[in-house]
Length: 374
Ligand SMILES: *Cc1c(COP(=O)(O)O)cnc(C)c1O
Image (cartoon, rainbow, N blue to C red; front, side, top):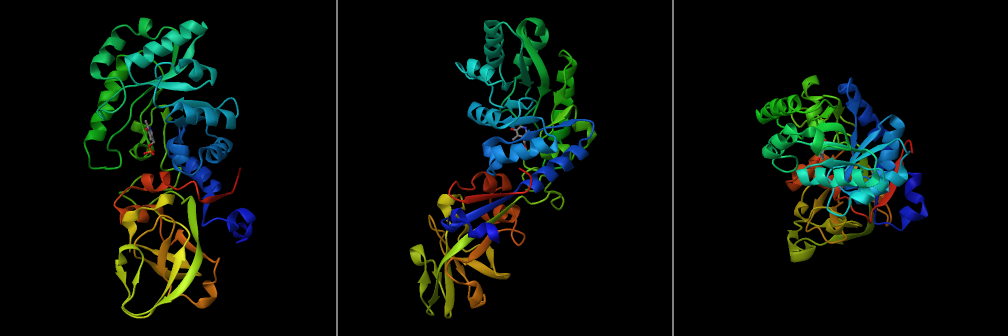
């Protein structure tokens, strides 16, 4: 592939391909599922590890206008990268002292506490103009969002507490949407509807990726898919309906023959029975590849499977390439670590974690190649 022969790729130990066309397609698929509602894009954690600026630009080109980030720094980066009509919502509210920057950057804070509401109201008063916000109401997650007593106070006097604020959405978040058998999802829907009935009229937003699959009753006015856009399975009860968005290739730094009975790697955990050919690849746990994956999974080299063996090192991974023809094993050739043969969800299952963590830990040392629409 030509992209692997650029100078930037040739000095890297591993290359991460991010398919922006797939990200955009995934957004279109979620927008179609939630038609009638606006489809936002959650791009926190630097776009689930894929790079929030390039993915958000592709999502904007596909039609997304509301973007969700976790913190102000993420919002500031997006504000500089996106056209002015993009709405950038910040999930973690208005920390004390941060109101002026949030307003100056035209970010839309998601207010999680009465304290957030007060600080944003004071900022609106200071600036002498209305400020936009979302208000997050907890419906059972018990993480962020107004508690029951705070909701009571808000519902009793919204005119005073929200003075100078434009509530663009009442919002809540589902705890168990990826488990279709869990009754908590419907309970949260009930609590959300009950809260909305007590509050001034405004758009509403409840569903994350998995929530979108629970049907129109969960869509309200705005849906908030994250993981689905980034290609891991948002609905684990069925085959992944999304397009994969990444491929990860690691360079073959060295190939050697290992004599029968000898060991490979730290702690000598892997002993070869017969004579084996072993390759060292240019990525490791410092790149976010889990150390727990020692001896698990396979890479593809020239269309042939090669099992991963021995400890994962900081910057290296070893694979048994005995069955790979020598013409694919020159120094500098490439092995595919994540790709069609081994998805993000498979890597997560092998490591005892979730696709979200595999994606968000994709390391900054990988040379990144963005494919598809800019
Ligand atoms: C992360 C997050 C989302 C997106 O969740 P996915 O499961 O990735 O779709 C939506 N809403 C809130 C409040 C979130 O924190």
